[in-house]
Image 1: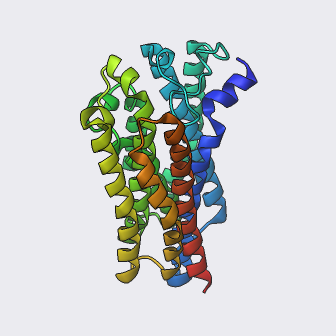
Image 2: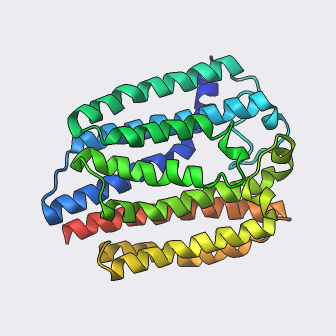
Length: 301
């Protein structure tokens, strides 16, 4: 098993999302500890964020494994954001090596989950079980269901934020759920836009992503509505007092969002669409980073 193959299949740059989600959940918990005196533990924050990074790596590995096993990764046009990592088709890893690497990453997560369950209570178990099911079932089952984008929105959006929050306070709160919803919309959209170049290859193995079910134009409309909803959600939550006013910093990304929405309808021209996919990634990371910064600033001032 080559080191280069491990780094490639894990898709290290993609792990930035998990890092930011961990920081966001931690920032919400820290904000509430300053405002309301709820528990906060810096060591738990670091351990939970490490667990998220390993879990996200496992997702990436299993996705490559199942895509290569089905033959999909040998048919897709690979881009920096879609079509798999290329580690297995290029020979850097074998299918068997990728499978065992994914299992190893998964094994790393188990003791972390057990630890937090012991110190913070059994209510963490449903979240961990749901996250596990999403990791295992996403590629072989959920992607063939007709609307699979809800799964990454939940598993790589809401659950990481709630989990990173739970390890401090030992409960799920409405405020944490409200803070996690922009991540649902954004990660949903991250996967949705990245599916556009894979439509033809995905059809051959029976996948039913939104660009296939609705067509690319219909999927671009859904993408646009979800992105607009992010800003309304943040503004509405601030008006209702459920998110600190500093989180309005996320609205600074609106000019980029307008560019991405326009570009989402240029799916027929890959020379135009690929830069749009890049802007979408930066937009998604920036909004969530600014939300985290907003919670931190809200706790300071």
